[in-house]
Length: 227
Image 1: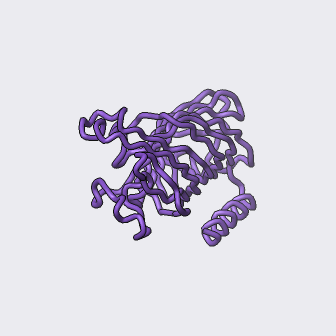
Image 2: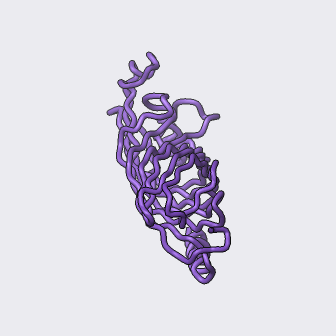
Image 3: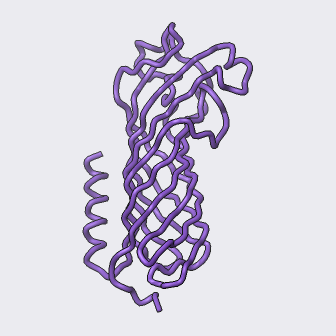
């Protein structure tokens, strides 16, 4: 993780020595998890999520994007639409902290130095490094953590953004993260001590989703792609 943080910091520092349009801001909203406990709905925010965001706009069509975020994950079998899960009655709570880096693509040109109001749909993808609690579900049917774990995740984000003034931008997005872990929910504990507590589909990894609003501030020199 230290190496990943060093790479991200190096990219941020090097970006400031050239003429770019920068954005810094915050985002907040809801999170939900998709796996072997609770509801299987993909967009079902039921816990808070928030973070810090930085973008280095390379053209009106794309930007390098970095973020640090955290979100709570919560699931309850009794709120599932699957009868067998409702009968089972498992519950889990976790927290995920992530560092994200990737590229954001705009469907339409988005000129941050244009005085006119502009908006565009966009997509984002890249790579995330996430830290979470390793857990198991005990006889009480609730999750218990026993260690810290980490995983790589692939973000798939769609959103819409609009400038609301000369320097401020507002965006709404839904971001699905596919992880390379099957234990965000305690269904597949890695510690052999808890192997008896394993359940669910071991061939399917877990997902989590952030549905958020972001507010960013624009600054920096006017590159040659602007009028």
